[in-house]
Image (cartoon, rainbow, N blue to C red; front, side, top):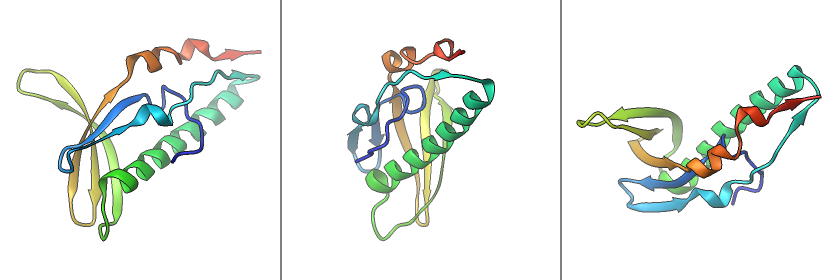
Length: 124
């Protein structure tokens, strides 16, 4: 699994669906909601940088574990917004392996995101 806790705003996902694999992963199992109080703006910025790196690392691990199968090798991923024919925005994760480009559909969990707003970051 994913032993490190992450903030819901960083990985606020409900489900990750591999369109080609027809599989669903419950990402809620990887989310731990925590509240942080920072003593300074520098501490806050350090945490933001660490969480950004952790987010990339966790997405890569999820892609390698659930999407890309051997003998394929993970290359990169990026989050995109797809606008469908009706004008609706849909969140997607494009995952590149050495053989395929995967279009991964995922859904954010609004309850988890609301529980960790920027307004909850307090400075002493």
